[in-house]
Image (cartoon, rainbow, N blue to C red; front, side, top):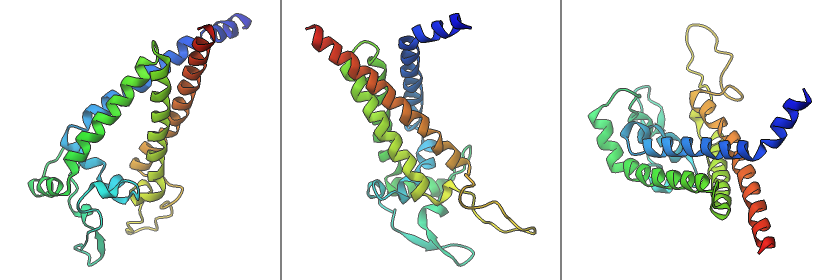
Length: 204
């Protein structure tokens, strides 16, 4: 068993690089998908409800009366389910600025992924990649507070619905909470990169 412990202890550097590669894959994949309408549509609820990001959209503060006579956020009436496209919804998203914002966000996310990956060879770049990964994850986790869709809603029915609201995460909420791992990963690679930078400066 000691040999296994020693193997893992001696492999920490390689494992941190695997962490870098893993974060890069996530960033590159998700960042690339931001160029496609279905992914851009999917983040509207998060952005519209975020105090730090809602200004990127033109219709974030607008409300309408839905078919049940309730006043709701306008974006809720223009959702395109994944795998289905409705022209009137697409047109609304164009006027909202949904796609332009998503393209820009995708470039930023992809760029962070590149910095993280380059940290394998260039520790200063890796440090900033780690810090930005931490910051991005912090913003994403804030959606748990600002976005109603992250928790199971009470839609009623013909039987009591006991499991809704906090702490019952919806599919969106379960997606968001996973960023706490990215947050920790960003700090780890930033710390390791900083250690290498200091070592290089000492040797010089």
